[in-house]
Length: 237
Ligand SMILES: NC(=O)c1ccc[n+]([C@@H]2O[C@H](COP(=O)([O-])OP(=O)(O)OC[C@H]3O[C@@H](n4cnc5c(N)ncnc54)[C@H](OP(=O)(O)O)[C@@H]3O)[C@@H](O)[C@H]2O)c1
Image (cartoon, protein in one colour):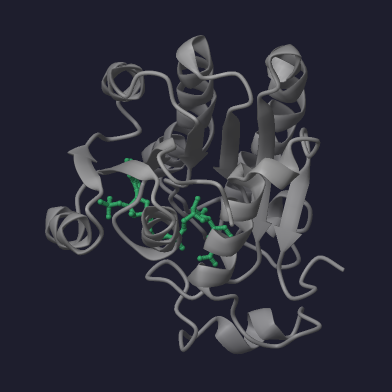
């Protein structure tokens, strides 16, 4: 029903968490899926064996390697940029290199990957960036640097949607709220505080994010572009 069968799909950061759920969802729909990872080779190999997807070790912080990997996938039907890191804490104490690395992975990499993919993407292609509801709302201390990276994604999505619209290529962000993963476990110490900001007080499931990605990549979403699709249980309401 998704019409994803046979589509050429690249997921950046697919070895764990939300990215792995997206790899599973698109592979199950019959897409030809490749995904990148940085450090989790065991998880990547296991996911590749499980789904039939191809795992490629590419650190999104390495711009040249990232561009080469995106270019190497040829004419993509969908690029899903999920790789991201989270650095939180008192900005007066945070390590500046760690903050800059997060900006490299969460901001620079999505921009360069999206542009590179668009060079040879099929008309009607899809670019989907996993942003965050924190791009809209940062309701507790310690999240300024992370929030700035996710707000930057919003500006990029709006601009690239206009750059590539004449080819029918859509560019959107999915903005999860708290989502159960290694980054943000549903049973972690921060969970009760985060649930306090939500209308529906549970973590989002990675599979729910993957379902939204499949919809955006599918044939019925051709007029959704330049948009932020928030899936957060009301965190940002
Ligand atoms: N979980 C949440 O509550 C939440 C909420 C809003 C938004 N998000 C966003 O959703 C995305 C995925 O989050 P998650 O919760 O699934 O995180 P996660 O469990 O920490 O998984 C992150 C994934 O990204 C990959 N990755 C990280 N740095 C990379 C790099 N430099 N190069 C290539 N791949 C890299 C990891 O691969 P390796 O392990 O191989 O390095 C892993 O597959 C992120 O953009 C995050 O900001 C998450």
